[in-house]
Image (cartoon, rainbow, N blue to C red; front, side, top):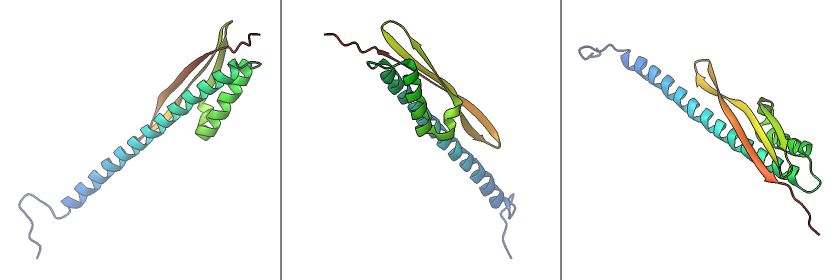
Amino acid sequence: MIQVARGHHPAQAVVEAALTSVLCVGLLLLVVSAGWWAHAQNVVAAATRDGARAASALGGSTADGVDVANQLLVAGLGVGAGRIQVTPDEDADGVTISATGSWPLAAGLGVELDLPLSATSRMLKDRWQP
């Protein structure tokens, strides 16, 4: 016969283990999702830098910069690149490429939060001086 300690039920340990494992898995998913968001932020920052560099190059245009930035977003984020909007700006001295959007963060239990992504890079235009 199984001896049961006073105040405890035989299945109590199983219920506690089940509840604890659900919480631990949820926390692990949250940490992994936050890591993917950090990766996405780094990809967006790199895309704006390279886009601004391409647009500011001698003979380059803001359309070239936006194309380069979008190609890097697709390469780094895959289908998630569609969540990011790239906008150029140009003045007499330089080119600015900005990207804004959001990235989904799985919070568990069917809850999804969107964390913001944004980056802006400015480069001075290359000018050839004879």
